[in-house]
Length: 485
Image 1 (cartoon, rainbow, N blue to C red):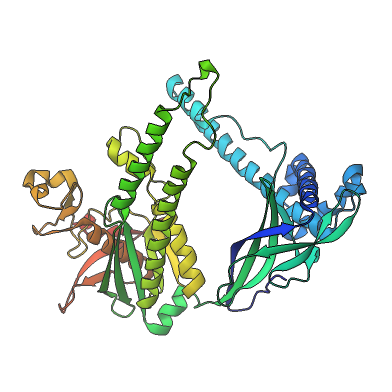
Image 2 (tube, rainbow, N blue to C red; image 1 turned 90 degrees about the horizontal axis):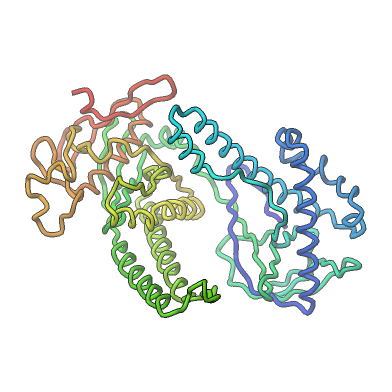
C-alpha cells in the first residue's frame, strides 16, 4: 500500500531492483503488451484534443479519460482492471506533456531563428533546432502494478493479476531483493520483462520530518549555518567551506574546510579504457563496403567499467558531502548553478573541453540533493556563479586569476596550474577554489540577511563587507562590493 503523507513531513520515494521468477512469463509479456496498447490509446485521445488535456488537472484525468477505453472494441473486450487503466492514463499523460514541452521549445527556437537578419545565421539556427518532435508510434513501458493488482506479499513472493490472453488470473511471482533501509516501506512496483529476464522494481517510501522553512529556522536560532561547495575540473574536485552567519550582526564566520580528490584518477582510468576500446576497434574489420559491421556488444565490459568508475566517484563524493553537512549541523548546502555550462567550440582548449564534456558536477549535485534531503532533511540550493571567482572573499576587492597574473610567474611554482591561484589587490595569493567556495556561501547569505554580509577571519575582531544587495525591478540582485569602488 502507498504510504500516506503526514503533516510536517515530506515524502521520500526511491526504488529497489529485485530479480523475479514466475512459472508463466508469457503472461507477463502479454500483460505488458496490453498495458502499452492502453497507453497508446490514451495518448491518441489526449493529443487529439490537446487544449482540453492541458487545462485538465492531474486529479481530474481519471474522470475524463478513464471511460473512453470502452469505445475501443479490442481493449474493451479485455476488461482491463481499473488500476491498470489508471496507470496507463498516468503514463500517457507523461508522454503527451513531455512531447508538448519539447515541441514548444522547438517552436520557440524556430521563431528566434526567423527573427535573425542574416540568412547565414537564420539557416544555422534552424539547422541547430532540428526536426520537430513527434509523438511515439508505440511504447515499451514496464507494467505499473498498483495496490489493487497484487496481494499476499510475503517478502520473497506475491501474487499478481495478469492477462492470460482470455481472462485475468492471479499468478505467483517470486523475487529477491536487498533489505529495506531503515524506516522505509514498500509501495507499488513495476514488472519488467526484457531480454527474456523478469525484473521487479519496488517503490519504497518514507516520511521524513521537515525542519521547517529557512526563515523560521533563522528566527528560531538567530543564525544560519551552510556548507558552500565549489566543483573543479581538476583535483581537488570538491572544495567546501562551512560558514555561519548571524542575523543580528550579519557577521559570517568560517568554521571548517572540505577538500576531496578523485577527478584526476577518473580521467586517467577513463583514458586508459578508451584507449583499449580504440585498439580493439582498430583490430576489427568494420568496413561497411564489405558488409561487415561491428557487433553491438563490442567492448561491452570496458564500457561498463567506465560507467562504474563514474558512478563510484559520484556516489562516494555525494555521500561524503551529505555526511559532512550533517556532522556540522548545516541547514543548507550551496552549489553553483552549472545548468547552462557546456563545452563550447573555440572557447576553451581541446583538453579543457574534453574534461567539461565528461564532468560529473551536475550528477554530484543531483545525488547530494537527494541524499541530504532524504537522510537529514538538509536543503540544497544553487546560486549564480557570477563574480565568485574574481572577488576577494576576505577584503571584497577585485582579484586577478589565471592568465591575468601569468606575467608574475605564479605558475612556476609546484602544483600550481592555470587558474588555480588568485592575486588579491593587496598582493596576497590564495587558492582560487577556496576563494570561490567562500564567495558562493557569502553570496547566498547576502540574499538571506537584510544587512550587508561581513566576513570575519578567524581570530580577528572585525571584518569587511564582501557582497551587497542591489534592488532591481525583479527581485534582489547580489553584487560584489568592489563594483562600487
